[in-house]
Image 1: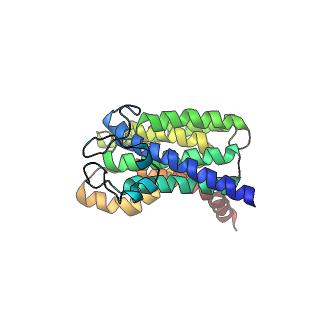
Image 2: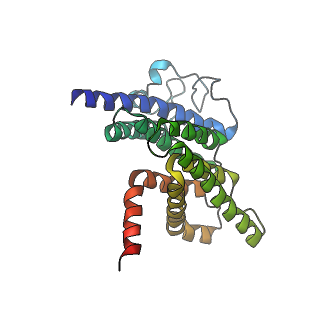
Image 3: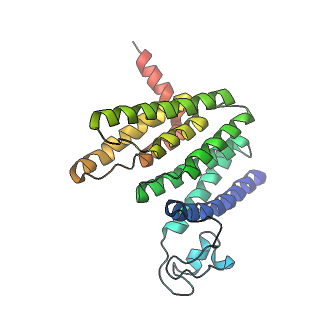
Length: 256
């Protein structure tokens, strides 16, 4: 029991640190800024943040959400992202134990959060998340288990091909770009982690959530739909409960 608690706590600490780096990615990637230079700085005065003020979650709380130098407020998004990623890594370790399955789930969930936040704010899904995630998903499929390397390759192909086909048909029908390349690349990454069935379920759930929640708002305001946000929600639900949803659907279809 102690060993299990230690693994979960260690995973939470590692996840929070990765969440801190994810904050850097979310801020800098859409702005085409370097991820390594300069070191973490205050968004208002650009003063470098000292290492002891940069401890995930606790640094922000210790400073009461303000920069030590200029005293301007620092967005609560930073500790919230760190806490969310730390919690997800802890849940992954608790659910799957100290295994590569846990690492795969933790990395996948982290990528989905980064994609959702950047797409919601900037209508951009950076290639570092999608193509980098695709490579990681394919490499992690070599661990054995599910998805296998073949299933991951097939899932990446299916995810890319289906959304590419939807984008092509939409462009022909509406005579303008119907979907960004980031969404298409994202589905290749999702397929590498979830396999082809998971890719299909992600697209279905993403479309369902987007239609119900954002569809009416987009119709009234004529704003673009950040579809990557809803695909990220669909992919996370598929990761957590995809097997149960597919089993329920197949049972419903086969019922007399």
